Image 1 (cartoon, rainbow, N blue to C red):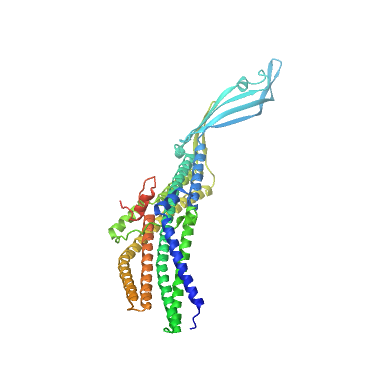
Image 2: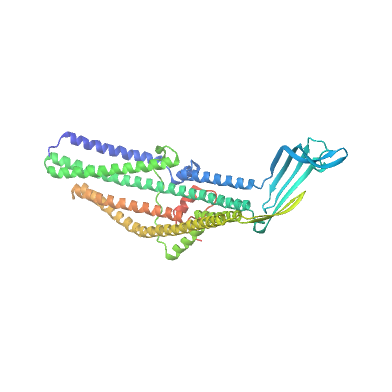
Length: 485
């Protein structure tokens, strides 16, 4: 291999770039953020798309409740116009059998209210005029108050369709509020996951930076020996190739870290440079979960999952709505009272299609709601079991890998001392560095998987928390297993 000064200059530039990058990392470490600070910004900053969607759904459900409640408010009804009334024809002082019609003005104003027990009242006032009182019946001409009362009889008493739809709207509102809480839990879990992904990327970058420095040192030594004629060109090419490979891996880890930093910054709504490095370490590894603890986690998840509570509320809403549909399709018996009449009214739809359709619709509403709840319960059980299994598989591996990384790092230190003393060639140091780097990155992957498994466990079986979310308390909670009732 014909060595020139250009290759040696390139090597110097790479060493200078690595030194500048290490210095930049030190500056970022001084201006980094803790996980508590990230949670403070994430929980008090802009909401996620899912949270906004759940909030709008809650607003819609609240509006439906207000609209359903408005059916029981007082309403005003007013009508004015003309009426044609029959008047007997008089001949002198005698009445004949003839009939004439007179047009009079008529105005009727009333207020109405539907009570939740189904009773409907309409008090009002009726005013008529425009013709001689001698020609018309005095009873028809006078201003008089009116009152209409309608009382449902049978199954509609105490629970009219309007009341059932109000109960259904209130149940849907409760479900939408639970959805907002679930979106808050998902947003919190995403903050933790992106933070742990950033920590893993920056730790891998530190490992690859150290490996790259050793590889560049090894390549520089090989190039000097090749230039002196004591090392073959093939061996120099191998040394430079290993250095280029280490530099390529370092560039990949840098790109991964920048992507993780950018994704977290977008979620927080801040400048990516503001994050710097995450200064909070990974959670300490925890021993596995026993079968008894797993069953307790499952039962706790089924009790605490707000999305499962939301589905239970939707089942209640479906039942109330089904009752309203069936009640409207069924026959209705009512008692009508007024100042001039007393009636018993009975309405029966002819034909069976309306009743059959209402029955099918009611069964479908309840069946779909119950099916969604059953599917969610099965999915919750699967999430808890998968997260617990991942946790059980990862925790023992972390302890074994920590011990291995410690031994390899000690061997790396011994190889460097041997190189400086002139006992071992530089290739031995690079070999030890590559073994240590591979094991250290595998350990980082295990620590990341362990932290993500903890987040998934908390997401599958949430810990009961106070209304006020304190970031420091959240960090302690998510560093341990969920509390079990």
